Amino acid sequence: MKRAFLIYNPVAGQENPATILGDIALKLSEHYQLTVVQTKPDVQPGELAKQALKEKADLIVASGGDGTVGAVAGVLVGTGVPLGIVPRGTANAFSVALGIPTHLDDPTGFQNAAADVILSGHTKEVDTALVTTSEVTDYPMILLMGIGYEAEMCDAADRDLKNALGPLAYVISGAQKLLTASNFKATVHVDGETAEGEVAAITVANAAPPFSVLAHGHTGECIYDDGKLEAIGYVAEEGGVTAKVSNVVNMARLFSGVMFSDNPVQNEEKIFGGRYSDIKIECDPPQKVVLDGELLGTTPVTARVLPRSLRVLVPPPAAPTAEESAEVVHKIAEQEGVDEAVAAIVVDKLGVRAAAKVVEDSQQVADKPVVAPSTEQSR
Image (tube, rainbow, N blue to C red; front, side):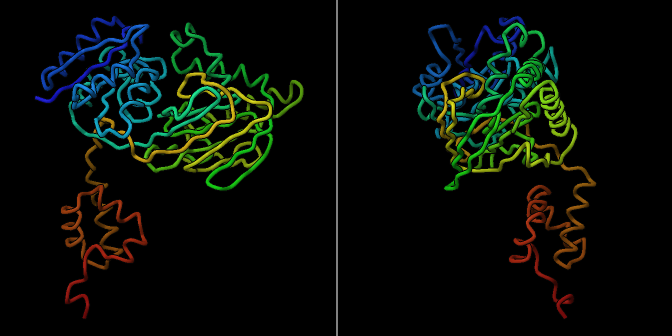
């Protein structure tokens, strides 16, 4: 039987920790030789993860908030040992980004749903990044870092507010910080190019839930397995009451666009950015840097992506519907010039998801046909 280690943070969440631990342990122990270890003020989750690796763990499960998950993930980067997650924090941003069930989905049964995801055995290789600030060197990042406005927003969201409101606490503290937002000078080096300008906030994201609006606002989607980091800057209005109101309105529009639309926000005067693999940011004056929810020094800061360096157990993809299958069959038949009966055989052999991916890459289809025309069709 394979060995699994459950690293459990008993102070995370508002549920009864003993009950939740019992539910998780009962499910996992039916399929794994399970060892349960708990974090303490003087025993950090990263230390427990390193010990689990020394004891030849086949699976390591982190149960706690994003801090606990991030610390364990940082140890597992590049090891190939899969990470299971039972999220019990305030925002659970990494879990939300990956579709792992949280208390927002089911307040009373999320732990069982998350354990079921682990037992499904479906893994995905996701990117991580290494970040260096004034205080840390090559610190692993699974989510995002914020400079300026976003750092101040996270710093301002106190524990009581987060316990009461969850992710909404960040929205409220963000709105408050927008009333005092001011621009600073930033020099940004990305993949060999340099740009300078006045900004109020910069976000560099690897993965992010929808409520991290700057991470999604310009590119339209924060992709966690593309070998790139999203780097987004926001320019604030400066001045009196009118400017303050304008900042709140602009961010509200951005939030609405991210939450309720699939299209990126197109406003190059206020929000700009792109996807890059190596990033260095210098600010005048130096700015706070929040990294995966923790304040970790100030600028200058560098970030470099580690493509697909972390294996995470995530929900299996939903089975394609009959309509989706029919659409892929039709597209292959149309692109390849074959009967739909022939295209259906190809889709059945490749699988709907793989066939759909080929269809989306028109150049690949043109260079290498999925099927060859029949003899009669060639005449």
